[in-house]
Length: 301
Ligand SMILES: NC(=O)c1ccc[n+]([C@@H]2O[C@H](COP(=O)([O-])OP(=O)(O)OC[C@H]3O[C@@H](n4cnc5c(N)ncnc54)[C@H](O)[C@@H]3O)[C@@H](O)[C@H]2O)c1
Image (cartoon, rainbow, N blue to C red; front, top):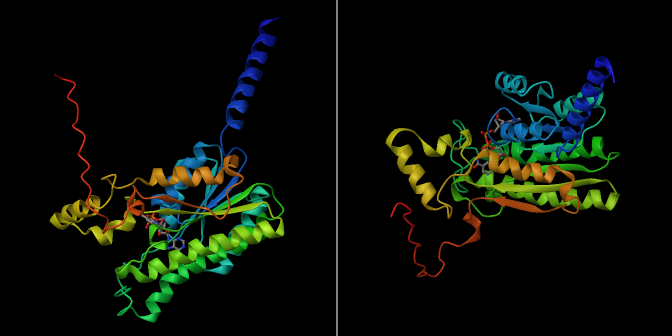
């Protein structure tokens, strides 16, 4: 073989090996839309999806941050403004994805608010205003309803599509001081199952599952943690109630969302996965046990 032929075959085999490596990635060829992706769990999910070969459309209200993150993620990422509570914005973004990529395979309905932001007032069942209750539900619950509605419209002719709804531990138990949040997340949990069964009945190849994080360290916790001395104490109190004795990381939720987005779980629909360091595994008034703590071994002796 002459030198030219030799180097051409090397280039071809390099290209082949890059192609093979990429096609082994878990989301290779998938087009994915993530809401609330400018930061926190949404952004961590975008990064995990990109690492697994997906084309990712990030969306959020915070355009400066979202655009910047998409740029950092490289050519397989792009950004759109999308307020999840606005049907016309869903329609526009879905049309644009269809035009640009000809399909959408995965939707992560991640955007959500707690109602603890300034201006929302009390969030307990006795003192909350109807307006504040509606505002929280409008984003968390209506936003997921709209996401599923438009996703079904654009996914139903495709194969192996997946919708992942980000609910919460609060969608499973009551939270007296964040009642609207808890109610809206319970709605997300239940609607996930209706969507899953509807798609199955219609013969659409769309799975729909929910994830239920708790105590994940993101900016969402800022109003609860406060600042200064209080922050340290609040964090200590918080962590004391978590069996794994630490806050979770957004990447740990992203890894679960990634699994549900892949074709590794084609028999999973209408399911719910909890990522909470063990919080929901026990109950507060359980009988005291006498489990002794393991002595930590000291290798230096
Ligand atoms: N962090 C946790 O411990 C935790 C626990 C349970 C559930 N969750 C859920 O996970 C999801 C992500 O939470 P996070 O901790 O990353 O929060 P975060 O506040 O860090 O990020 C939320 C993102 O959603 C965006 N957003 C808010 N309203 C929006 C709207 N109307 N349309 C589009 N985007 C909007 C925000 O701009 C922000 O970028 C939320 O649904 C939240 O309820 C989080």
